[in-house]
Every structure is written in structure tokens, then in C-alpha cells.
Image 1 (spheres, rainbow, N blue to C red):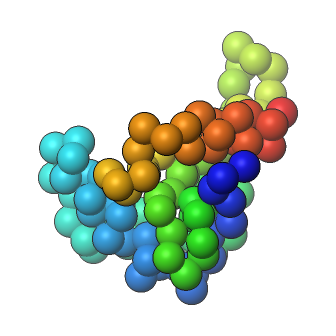
Image 2: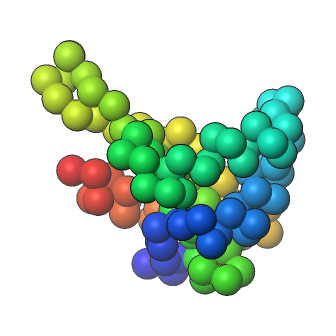
Length: 109
């Protein structure tokens, strides 16, 4: 895989927040930095309800992906979905998103 995935921790908060802000701006979401930080903190501290992964080098990530965990009656047990997937504009259209999706599918099975 061209881009590695690393589970994000509290130490990654300051690298994640600018990317979250960029993603939300692109999507036209009106979230504040405080809102984003409050939403990220539980999963960066190990909440079983979600995980955030840094895409690319841990100290200079090219994106992130957030997985939310839940429970489905329809499927008879735990489920997960991609809540957010962001790649910096300069690395888009190079197949990295597809690689990340494949890696997440393999991880979540």
C-alpha cells in the first residue's frame, strides 16, 4: 500500500484538527474547532465507539479516516461505518483512497 494507516492517539490531535477543518469546509459543514476537538477526544482516548486513523506518515499525514462502531439488529451484531475520509487535495486521484477503503474493509471484517 502506498499510504500507511496508523491508529491516531491524543498525541495526533493537533495534526488531525486542521485536516478535519479542511474537510468540513469542503463539505460546507459549519462546525467549530471546539466542536471538532470535543468529538475527536473520546475516540483518541480509546472509546469503543470509534477509531481515527492517520493516513500516510504519522508526523506529516496526508489524510485521515474515522470509523464509527455500532450495533445492527438487521445484521445481527456489531457494525461499523466510515464516518469521514479525507485526503489532502494534492494527493487525490492517485488511488490512495481506494487502497485505504480496501485496507479498512479487510480490517473491519
